[in-house]
Image 1 (cartoon, helix red, strand yellow):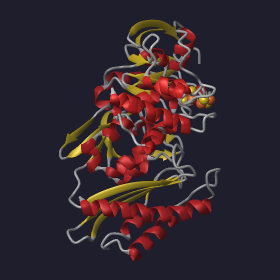
Image 2 (image 1 turned 30 degrees about the vertical axis):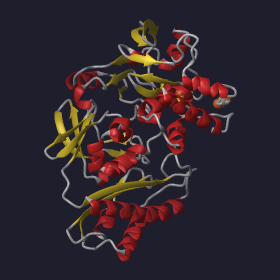
Image 3 (image 1 turned 90 degrees about the horizontal axis):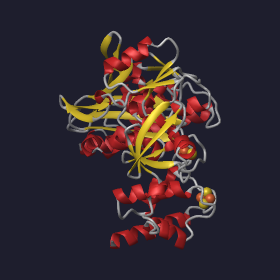
Image 4 (image 1 turned 180 degrees about the horizontal axis):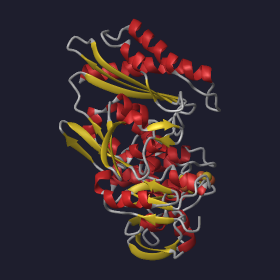
Length: 158
Length: 289
Ligand code: FES
Ligand code: FES
């Protein structure tokens, strides 16, 4: 059976790839396009490590098929920094130790960016609820939340 | 498994033709939050996935005859973010907000939640209590069905081969109407209901209950409409006596199983407690509307 031919936009660039129908978008990003910044934690929608923006919506790429990306537009962690210049969220996670092993970090950064685009000044409770779908086995979450708060403040200053 | 095919038709007719014409196992793909997990766990081996998200009737929230029509594949995030619909049907929003994480709500839909037919599905008691009807399209054309007639057992629905849930209709409500949904879970977030209760009420000008609908989730093989529990509220001001009768009727209707999330006895008890709490929230909302 012929593989599916997919054309999609990732971080503003057009990409083409071939995939089997059952391959997830996560597997396509990592194994077909070698965009390995997006991580796999659980492959069942529970941990958020695989988060990407798909047509403006925060999703788990392990719960999307690669074929569903045809004609769509995506943002992944690879598009977050501009060259050498880190996004304020990335900068604050580094400064405030918002990560340890880093497996959860790309997903948390993508999810946190989506939150701050919706609400530039979320409360701590709102941040914790928004990130409830992003599991981290290292940090205990507190430094993650502090990093998001600090980045939000920085971004509000413009 | 190697020849799993994928189609994303743009019309209802094309989708139904694909589903009805498939000789093997054909599955509807909406948000995929259940289907893709089952697929990758090898619990299902479909031959064809029909992605229905490109069909215009399946998504969107619009006013219709004073009520609201919600496309069956409309994502939960869009439902929760819709201010007017949220104001009209807060009980639906209670249930939609409890579905998984933000990421899962960015894909999951009420139609998928109902069609997946899990007894613990959060939105199902809420839409049953709301008195919603489902618009179904299939090889024989269109039919309108009360939502409580769709799920018939765990993973089983009354939909015929080739039929798709297209949209839900929430009828116009009288003044002084309100609804609520509550569930009990061991964790506060990201968990599956041990008991879920949806209640909708309509009051008269003096606060007497004119009409009530009570639905219970996760306490039987399918979500239950509990008419006996609704009947004890009607004609009362929903005072302590009525709430005690409601709790007793809700507990009496349960036919639960023991599982890792809760025993039978626990579910029966919690159903009564939650029914009372849900009714009080619905009452407060009805008085304000
Ligand atoms: S890998 Fe997708 S949610 Fe865990
Ligand atoms: S930093 Fe290790 S899982 Fe979050």
